[in-house]
Amino acid sequence: MDKNQQAIQLMKEQKYEEAASLFNEMIEANPQDPIGYINFGNLLLHVNDAERAERFYERAIELDHNAATAYYGLGNMHYEKQNYKKAQENLLKAIEIGLEEADAYYLLGMSFFHQEKYRLALPYLMRAAELKPDDTDYLFQYGLSLAQSEHINDAKPLFQQVLEQDDNHSDAHYNLGVIALYEEDLSTALDHFNQALEIQPEHMLAANAKKQIMEVWNNTDM
Image: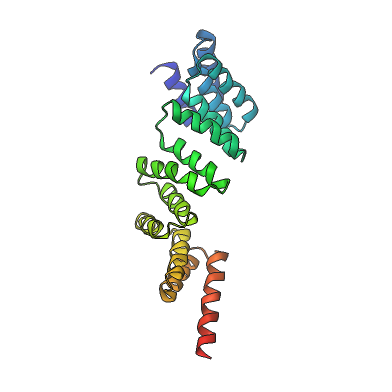
């Protein structure tokens, strides 16, 4: 196991000072190699030192303009800071260079999503879900972007797939309830809202939707 692998393993074991020491040795031994700077940046970001992490990522890019993982690190950093425009720019650059990682596509899609650019988010969230089909977060957010883009019929099977993988996903139940309302199927909608509330009693959106259905039914009975 080389020093880089040792340091990454130490990070996984939360031995951050030891990992930092090894990354520092790598940089001192090979100051023109961007890998050491990128990994040190990852470590700094992991311990919430974004300001220093940014400097290490930028140094890596100075050494190698095609250092895709450095752009990914910057994108991840800006995403965590909710600076979605900057996150978008760096993540897009990482993917353009050739980074084919589900996390990169997901964060890029979510950067567009948080800017309410749902249609722009779609291809990246779709690719993330293709690369990690068992990740319910990726499937759910792809479905949500489809729904926000008014592709209701395409969103529905994705929410159903989320529930096949995790039957305690309250937001998937809620969104299927909303789709059932759109389809004018109040009984199915109510069932999904009830299941969402059973899983998450404080789910206010499901509670409000259920209340509206009950008011409609009560008024109809009158």
